[in-house]
View 1 (cartoon, rainbow, N blue to C red):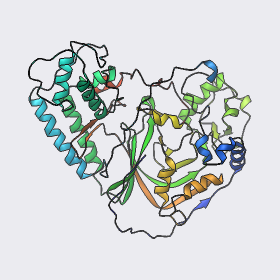
View 2 (view 1 turned 90 degrees about the vertical axis):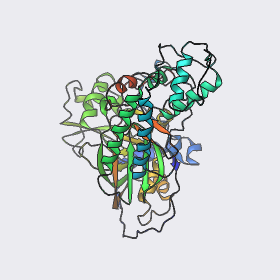
View 3 (view 1 turned 180 degrees about the horizontal axis):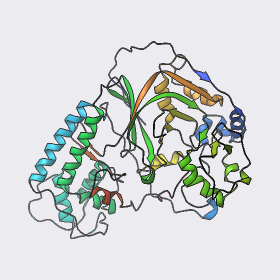
View 4 (view 1 turned 30 degrees about the horizontal axis):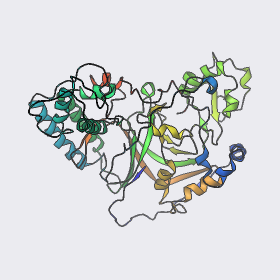
Length: 461
């Protein structure tokens, strides 16, 4: 997460706040789970020791089936910097400058394609290197005119230019021209121009109503969240968003509560598509994940799971409810924002997912890195919550609690795949949901050869 220090201004808050505590049998389950954690974890922040459990299972197989080879490390510096939000008139001005720049490039004939499909590594001699250099010069990653003889050696200067290109496109910064980099290089200037114009329209749509005093914006293709206060970004967070088959929707909703140690009420779609088929093969999965089976609705009576034929179970009648605790798919806090799509933001026990560059893994909800810091920002004007350590104090107590906000906060889920920054850097991201048209959809299908295996599914929202 990046903290962005806004320009100091006088706060204009002071309304009365209220909160409600809720206790349930889930608290007892939670305390038993906490007791099982290692002693050295209790000595500090015990939640830092949570490594995740079987929810969700991204490998598509049991843990004893053998380990996959470790992926090469990828140093992430993928969050925007500075105080200017996506949703701002300044962003429109930056994009307008980028549009003029790309209009000029297109008018001059654009840039050459880099042929073939083989990887080009630093130090290689490859007859495509001159075309690669011309491509990188067109958008400024490589300086100089390129007049005169062009050799075929992929030298260190060209490697650094490739790294700059990869940074601007949200790709793994390796310095090698791998398949995702090659696909991004070969999107034409005309197509990039259209992408900038399309995303200008998207940001203009976000500006159709007055900017609120405080709000949260999630940009799904950039896998990041901005908490904005008084027109400036207060902090940013990496997020996990919906995979292609379970897209995180565009929406405007309102954050009305923080739920600490939440139950997970498994949505019907997740139950039908993910959990029920798994239970056919793993009947003990419910016990491992502390999931109760209830009848009719989520507050209905508990029923015997062994009496159900999971191959024909009806999610409209049979509901699944996961107990609070470290194993819970929502983690330790849920950010309540009722909406027609049934999605929300929440913690996750699988913190390692935030270490990946492409983070489209969920069933549509948004998982937030350093979610306690976001919860502290959301709650900081509530009485008794002014201290930023209050959220961790609540978590340390191990007691379920709902904080009802008396000043609800708007939240936007947006889809911005191209933008520009104050320093003139033009940024592009993968069109993960195929909303920008061809050839962006084709480029999105190219797999990073060094990325960890793509999730085969998962049960978390």
